Length: 493
Image (tube, rainbow, N blue to C red; front, top):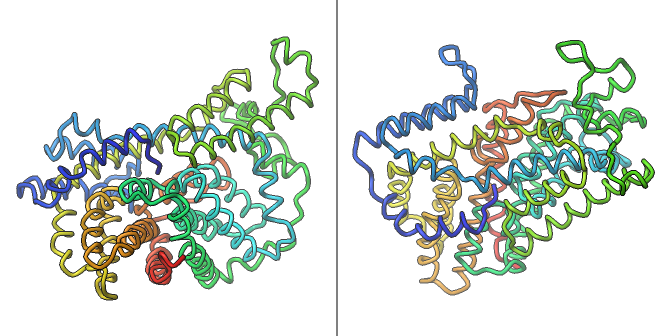
């Protein structure tokens, strides 16, 4: 997820008052009822189709949010306030921009780059890991997952390779890569703001851990899915197949009849890739080829501008929304086919999740856990760092990583200040690294995981349901090992 300055100021402005509330348990009924509502959220996220309540993750998220309000764990006004509209706006705009990038040929070129002299499925998965990790440091982990999930599914399907290892590679690499910069994810932005660590210093402090962590994560994926990734070396994708992927069709449909909808009509979703027709004089004077070239070039230029705006610290949400609207306006036709590609159910899921997590934080349980373990988590010993890392991993998966950083940041920095000034910077970077990699522990550990899961499940072609258990089997060992190997490298440059 990404934070705007307004959201960041809201969180930081109430940081101290929130920490006081979180360090004190609420009344017993409020703790019990809040825990029940949070347990409902977890149950529906892990088992979206349980026999006694087969309503799915999105409805389950809303149910748990409503329970938080009904149980008076959180007030209606606070529930509305806890919905982070800037994050929802960022996700919405990113999906729109991703649709235009698909039509501009980005995925076709990216597919050719990934497949260039590919030695098979194992080599291809490693390339996906590297590209995702590096891109997420600049585009944010959520943005990369929104844009790349369906593309990765197509990439695996073209080569008759299983989707699961590629989806795990995408989600885990996006989280690991986003740890390297202050703009990679929201907790890093909070940490950079509080610690006053500059962009270059932040990057160099975590970059070695990120690179080694990315490599370790790749090796673990290869070890776990070596046999499944044995094929895919002799694929030869012709031009029609690549165009089919670019337009949002399955490669096979390029050689067969057009896809039909339930009424027997050709699917109108291909309108996104049709020739652009308009009566505007400027466009009428251009040839069709020039119009296409202009629109493709414009899509790439404004996307690069969006990344630059992220790096210089402009409002991420409004930057993405502005980019999306610029593409819509310049496209100069009805934007409804593009807007139909947005996963609105994912936005609803996140709204319910924001309310649920906020309500759970109001019970005081996350703060009580930290208060109990704080004396044993000093950063001046290996044992203390290990305990601190375990606490961060636990709280990041229970209370979400941004509240965890807000709760622990100042306390960890104060403890480090008693050691040396250099230890303060290292402690902030350590918090950034562990809270980010903690997102790989479970499917609910980060928004990037949920985006990959829901986008893959709702994909119009080659859909895949990545379950909680499929993720956690890889996520737990990967998180523990990547975290451990990265900690000694933090702040070494």
